[in-house]
Image 1: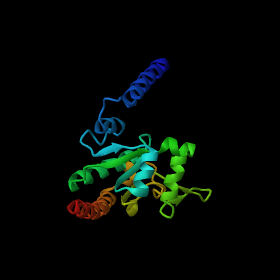
Image 2 (image 1 turned 90 degrees about the horizontal axis):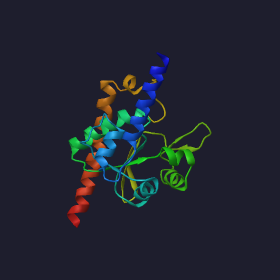
Image 3 (image 1 turned 45 degrees about the horizontal axis):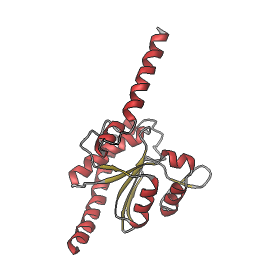
Image 4 (image 1 turned 135 degrees about the vertical axis):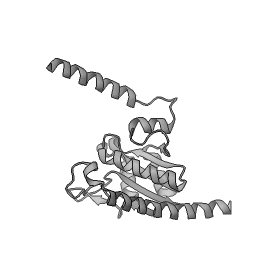
Length: 194
C-alpha cells in the first residue's frame, strides 16, 4: 500500500510539473489558468518579469500583481482580483512571479523594493520586503493604490479559506473597485487627450 501511494504521488508530481511548465505557444491567460486553476481561463493577467515590472512601477501606468503560484494566499487573492477586474472592465493586470527574484535578491528585485520604499512591510530583520500577494496601481510611475492585506499578517489564520469570510471578501472587493475606478478615470482622461 505504501509503495502505491508513493507511486501515485510521483505520477501526480510529474503531471503538475509538466502542466506548469511554460510553452511558448500558450497565451498569458491559459498559462495563468494553469498556474492559478481557481481563476480559470477568462482572466486579465499578462506576465511580466521582474525587470519589466520594475520599469512599470518606476515609469509606467498599469496594475501590477506580484505573487507566485505556490502561495495559497496568492491563489485565493487572484480569484477576487480577477472577478473585480472583469466586473470593472479592466483588460490587463501585469503579473510578476516574484518568488525566484526575491529568494535570490536579484538586482531587479532590489529595484522593485527601492521603487516601493515607504510602501512595503518589513521582514523580521527590519528590511523592506515584497510580501505576497501584492497589488500596486501606478500612473506614470506614481503609486495610486496599494493592497497587500494577506501578505504578512493573516490574524493567525493559517489558510486563506479560513481568513476570507464574506465580510472580508466584500471589503477587499470594495477597495479594489475604488482603486480600479480611480485608475480607469485617469486612464480615460489620458486616452481622451491622445
